[in-house]
Image 1 (cartoon, rainbow, N blue to C red):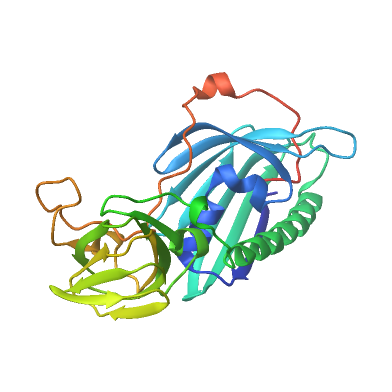
Image 2 (tube, rainbow, N blue to C red):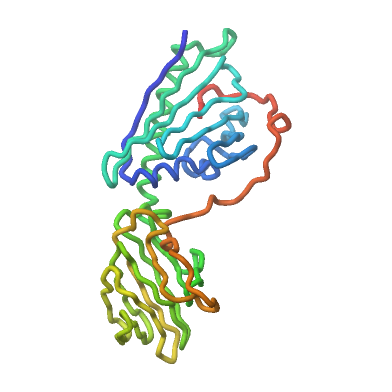
Length: 315
């Protein structure tokens, strides 16, 4: 007899944000309540083999097993299976993600499995257990992803971007807060320091000078701002920022809506500081992120060991 479960939950967050958060294997211990650690054994752009270890059970056992995931980002589908099957003849899982709206995503897990004759649970009992555990974990994932969007970020908690000049920090973006209408950040400028000229084909920009004095050249025409003053920069208007004061300036910016693709967000019209020629179009700040960390690949045959398996955790 083949076991089968089919569960879904609707999460109040954008599709891309839910996809990225739930496929970040290294962060699974913060997303699921059952996992103590994740060890990446093999990894490439569309697949990973990894070891999951659970928190110790009531008897003190730390259950562990190896799984494989393959993902299709365009289709928003993940296929997963247990490599070391334990009490299962096989365990296959399909994750699908459906966009219900700008801030709504349906996540669905379909699990197909077969129990070994000597397994501690038969198919009916396992189906009941998987359905119950899946409901608990899906609810927790929904809560944690939705809560993560209400994010408090400090200037020194995010990377600095100095390519166009100054110390620019993207604070809230699609990557870290699941924003859908734009992104915001701030730039620190020393006296005389500036941000090279560029424009946004798809987005408006809102500047607020929190501290210091600023000259903004709009299509070559200067506009002067003092502390606690704001400026609107329409689409396609070339702009360059220069600190004209005697102290460090702090300028807050918000840019929206988002460009159709990250690399279309900025168009540079003069060289970066220290460069001789203007670079090509550049990615919008905060709209892309490299995969966190890097784990050296380990040959699969050397990484898999037969360890006790918890039949209730199946991802």
